[in-house]
Length: 284
Image 1: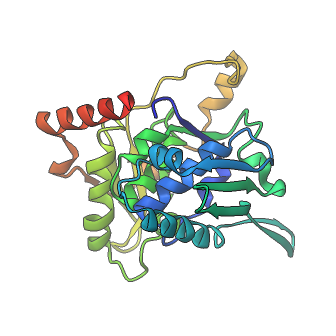
Image 2 (image 1 turned 180 degrees about the vertical axis):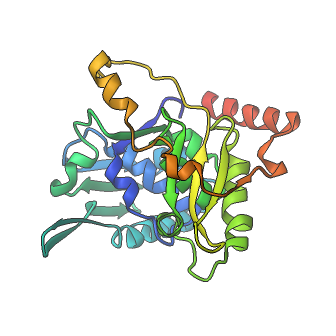
């Protein structure tokens, strides 16, 4: 499983994975990984390969087939919308999806109208190791993982609290105290091992004490230039210095509450267990 990399255009991060379980998130991004740079051709993926890549834990074939069905049922509700004035179009990402229980494979293809999401990607994309995601437990941590990967070279993401609720599909009934307990703390605990020095600031509105924004800070990753990513010129560096990801002056003056729970640090025993698990998977 080592080396499997998920790559897609950033616009897919705007689509919340509503009601997806942790297992279903893993299966969804495994499918995205297999379909990248495949244009619109139909792909047949053996069950064993799909289980291996998604780190699927159950040995029950019946449950696996049921999970595959649930994934597609939920994927049908994942719509990509293009608006032009008062007109709009909606598309589903995958238009062909067949589960062959007799020959034990899944057949799938991408919607031709959305093939640019997973094909010929040269800029404005999110990229991460599939194995990193499938070893996370919390669904909230998995979804925040893909969002933070979009900003891995800046180490900074600022998001409106309402947008945050929408993107992570947080129940509308959750108060801020419940978001702290069930969403933010699991994110810090699981992602603190992947994003170095991860910290979350809760920023209050100027009027009242209501939380208005969340600010995610972590140590940015160094850029690795490749054939796909042209070397940055001095002109482009100047343009990048004016980034929408930088902290504006008005934001610096806001009140904020840093979230640094004790759970954001792994014990040596936990680190060893995690690394041993990763090494075992790589040897399979």
